[in-house]
Image (cartoon, rainbow over all chains, first blue to last red; front, side):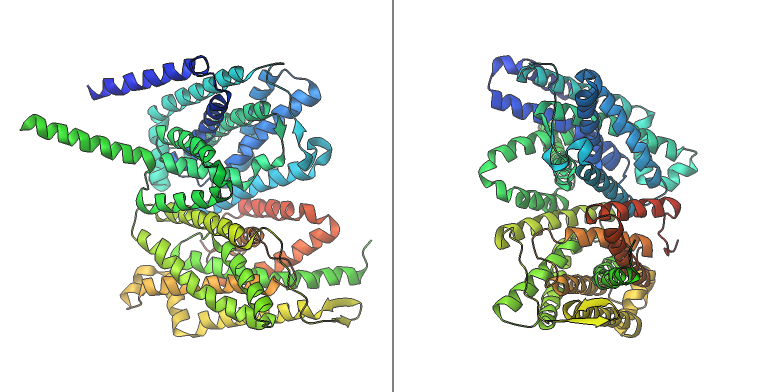
Length: 316
Length: 290
């Protein structure tokens, strides 16, 4: 009964989002949804590393930025068709994750946090200093997805990307891979002793997570059309962190929920733009202290309470 | 290409900056060793220390050394309050490492942006306090930098003495070696936690306060020193104060040589690449213990 209610709700949400641009042709709302789709992909895929595997990755913004820059440069300098260059951007990000994944394999928590953060900063500073290629802080003017593509076009591409990412994550996390990743998070030694090839799983997680993040970054660049090294700044990583924690790290719906809530919330708090990061910081602190599981765990506990009530009523 | 005197000059500058990095990194490393907390708000202690020194000396007319002392005292209590309010509720909770990383990130964002609203984003600089410069052979060192260096060395020696010879320092080292063992011998571990946190905040503030007259003060000024502290601790090994001292001076010199030979825009890139390479070869840092 409850399961079917959930699937009806999900189906309704899917249909609403599928026809949204025609039902509510409000360009601003569509813009916010596009951003939410793209960032949901980014945060969900960061969550594979951070939430599921317990890898303290503080460099996800690098994958996003590398995807964005490689796709933008390919389209701009070599004239590669944009849809192709976006996929290529994902591959470049994935390759770069080997570069950063390998050194972190033998490292423990805090060291991983530093190495990934340092990697992202190196990438950002390289993009900022390599003026001949990237125009540095002046930024690149990025080609459109398809010449003359409208907002609605981007909407569907971003929506498809989120669907693709979610389906892949669902499949992966419900397979043996998903169980192994959680085992690795809980105890790497125990997983090792059971004959699990921890390194293979970690590298695979890095490859998948960075590929999807790279795709998201590339699409973002071709949508926003202006690309500066700030795309890889620590601010993006903070935003990822807040979105993930708000929704609930280590769950599938958590990052998506958190991203949507925060994207819309921060738009409505636009008048308080200078307080935005003060609010973010407070949200993180409060979440760690009082709701470590985020919105998803809050919703779940409400759900079990309701269920408990129903059971009591049924029995009496 | 470079004359020997320019080279030596740059090395001396590196040692001066290095002394302030050591103050940052020693506390950072201490907290990791004792509490297992990766304090990502450590750069904000540096920033707050610099602001306190700035306001104390520009409003009250204190000299830089006095204002550094005021900043240290204030930040000692701030550090204790920070630990009590944000970290002590997490004791004994599952996933200590991740929770503390997240909560210090949150605190860092909060403090930094509060500072932005309260102090404004304008760069604030203190006037030179000690005019003139020292010249030995062809090496020129302004008195300001010399004072920073000497005070820095004095504070490092003080920290060393505190940890090595006082009862509280010994208790801190005991907790860092074996928490349960220390508890069993009657050490109040939670008290050691907040004392160590206050101490670490005070020394970070000293670093910020000392460099305030040389560099500018602004709300995000702590980010660079935090990353540097990270790098130093990686080299010196997490939890090792001795390693932090050696590595702090080495990286300070390395940084100023990169500035001389390449450019200041690439200096952080060089340092981070160096860190990544070192960690790839030695996952526990250069002097880190297993």
